[in-house]
Amino acid sequence: MWQDVRELVAPPEWHAFKNRVASTYAWAVPTEEAVAAVARHAPRVVEVGAGSGYWAWMLSQAGVDVVAFDASPPGWTWHPVAVGTELAVMSYPERALFLCWPPWNTAMAANALACHRGEVVVYVGEWNGGSAEPAFFARLADAYDVVEAVALPQWASRADLLTVHRLREG
Image (cartoon, rainbow, N blue to C red; front, side, top):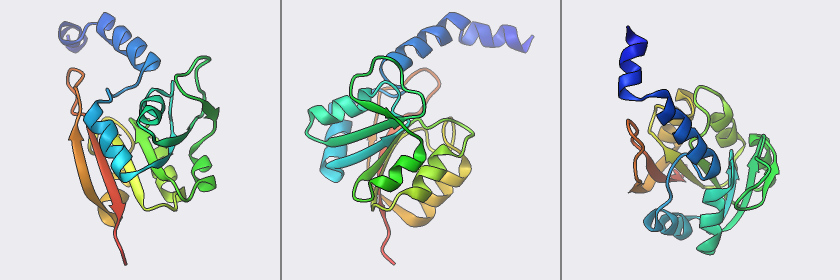
């Protein structure tokens, strides 16, 4: 019975369509305002979990210097995406960390944050749900201040937001 109700709300074709679009572009839709916010606060970025590199490409078009990594990048990308995990962050301590919809219920985002030595973190996704894990959000809330937030276009049943965080002094 429950499966039938879910199919009425979001049929399997919708999920397949969303996955194709998100795999080709990104799990969140960049806007001019969002890209400008990143450029203001983070002129040099290391992105982990970059997928097709669409956000990296959009940011680079705005003059942001981006190095992007993904554990398994697709064969074709919008921007160069090297094979790499969250550990790649350690090689770029002077850059802001950029995470767009890090995998849900995995330690990837928390590990990237723990490895990061910079002062700025840009997170794209839902706050405390849908992506990453509670430890990531707890660390951001405990050690960082939100300096800017930008609403993003929404997929059905999602609450995407771009937030720029700066490490608290002391």
